[in-house]
Length: 278
Image (cartoon, rainbow, N blue to C red; front, side, top):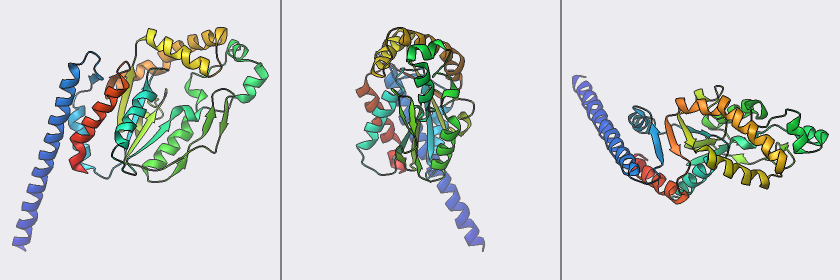
């Protein structure tokens, strides 16, 4: 009995020691990546909250089987989708099933095709005071339900939204549970969602760059001229109210101006730093 107790205590001691060595190794690797990034003309990381790297390393080691839900937000056209897509490209090189799933806030816009038809044009719709750029325009409750379900290991079917006709369809894409869930969009750090996020990321891009990007995308979605001007004014106004304040609660603020290839390079380095855990 005494021998068994001694062996168990000894095992726990060395297990904890090995665990701390792994955590320290990951922390050192991640800090080195961040330091090297600072030397870049356009660094990816603009700010990292205190103790974030240590807390992340500890969770990676101690919660190996846990699903990590990463919320990535920022203003319209800030580069959220670009960041997610290039992160995914880095992950895909390993060709491991069940590593990631992407849930996009844009898929959860509510159907407003009736309102658009009744108004007759986007210009008249916006002149009536209608806004696509508030949390009420998106079914955040449904998105939360889907995120929670994925974290529990269940499949979901995300909606499908048409940005030209403003129609929403229930028969979207099947999303499978995975080790990492990337949730990107305008309101993923909204007060009704932030509590389920394990990591909170904010993509920052200067307003003049946002504006140029936004107008190019708006044209591809059928919004030009006065209609585009009206919506962009609303986009800027609602961002100040609903999106920019979430920068304060983000664990990481990243640079929306970095080259897409560099995002992939950094992601690969981070994955390599924690690869020995899995």
